Amino acid sequence: DTFAYCRLPLKDSLERLRLEANILREMGYNHVEFYKSDNGYISKLSGLFNKEIVIHLGNEYPFSPPVILMREDGPFRNIELPNKVWSPDCTIGQLISAINKS
Image (cartoon, rainbow, N blue to C red; front, side, top):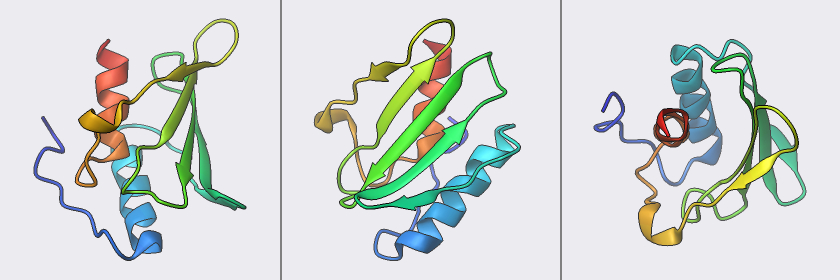
């Protein structure tokens, strides 16, 4: 896996978001920004695999998994990420790669 050995900072959330955005850009998403919301950060990705993806990172991120919504044709659907498969060492890029392969 491309990002298997990627270690991201756990305490500096802005630095982690910058690194996460860089990983997503390397994957081919050319416009990646995270916007601050009342309860975390949100980002919208589009352009690859004809999928539109919305990512919500709660205030507890990376210690809790992100909420990922995806749309190909039709309404957005929630991609369930059980806590037991999420680790703070995971990257959003790893999750998106796994989702796109499924």
